[in-house]
Length: 118
Image (tube, rainbow, N blue to C red; front, side):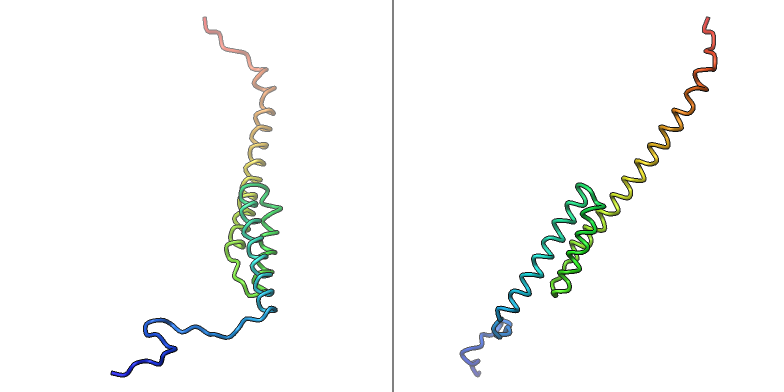
């Protein structure tokens, strides 16, 4: 039975040992900053004003992916925030229309005589 060379250990994957340059590290950290901002803006878009923070999350995730850093969570949260804002806006419009229709029926309700109960 032969023994493996001393620098290789059996059972462990061998990783690329090329050194990382300062430029590569800055590039990666800049991408991570944009990915983190995309996630933060996405969460803020869900819990607050989605029409403001949703597009910000989408822009930051696009910048992060330009740096080679995946930022799918920020993109998904941004779209969810935009969708929730649209749903909320449609609900408010429907509520206003419902209240306006009730208010417009008030003069007709007030003119009809009440039935005699006796």
